Length: 415
Image (tube, rainbow, N blue to C red; front, side, top):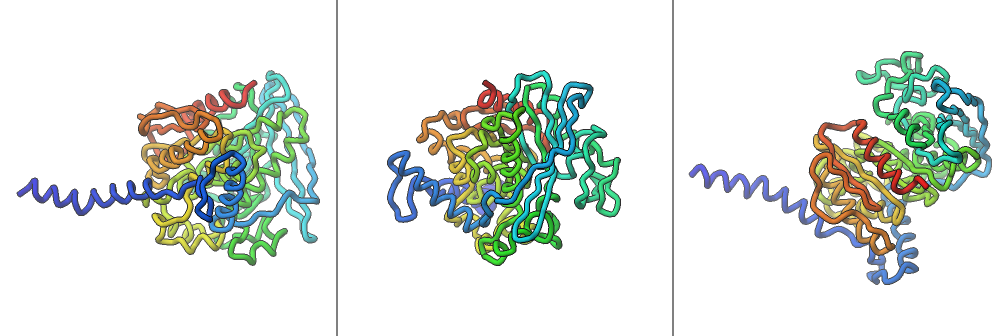
């Protein structure tokens, strides 16, 4: 009787979850099938299909972003060639943008290793607490944008950064290791670009410059705004003689990893994309029906994506697209997905499923894609043109993550 009850439990609880996950994998939309049902047969066909996919993901999920601003200038307000004990050149740059009679600005922090042969490759990424939070360097300008005061980062006073905010997020930014590998590190603060507070969404940063885009169902969402700003950072790097702008990788963690993936998908100038635990709306496959879902994204964070995305609440397993489409837009450029065993919202198996589903596009375009084989063991990275690893622990950026990300970058970005 005990075994009979156990079998019933499996039948009615565990088995449906397995079947739903399998069904999602089997029913994934085909990146090689045009909207009219025809099949991609050549690279020329793929370019047309890629345009369709980009239009779909823009319209249905991320929202329409403006192009490169006509009125944009870069102000280098800090240049220290002997920063961090003489090992680094520190530059701080304000990006000024004027559109529709309004101005917005945000700062880039640029660290360039002095010992590396210039121009150097670079890694650019958004940060959570302000540029001053990634390193205790006293020369970094304190952000004037709003800063949260949280249990993890108890440093802000009345929403303003203080000197106590210097280096509070340094554990997630392996600055010394990145620079020692010969990469420049470039970072910018999310709140200077677009507010991540639900009540303040679309009211600060760059959004007020483009009011017309907010009146559409496929409006300019916050993830898309962050991605757009990463491209503006690359615009600056193209003017910096110390940086090889053709070897710039875009990096992001968590919600900022979603932005990094979308930046790589929409801007082919990025040479590689490095995503750490980007989860739902990033590397996770929605159709598995596992982990954070569309309903939560559109309820807790309605500003992240276009309003049009809300039509899919409760329909994760029925989407006419999924995140392997985003990786397919990045193809054939290298992309790395890092995840962690206890990060259940990000669904590590779902991130791997996305990488596996994008493999066919990478191979079609002449690369080795994701190495063959099953879901890897802990701490056993896979590194083809698509890279992947899962480590022990939860939602974070650990040194192990950075070591694998830098190893992957060395394969693809170092001459």
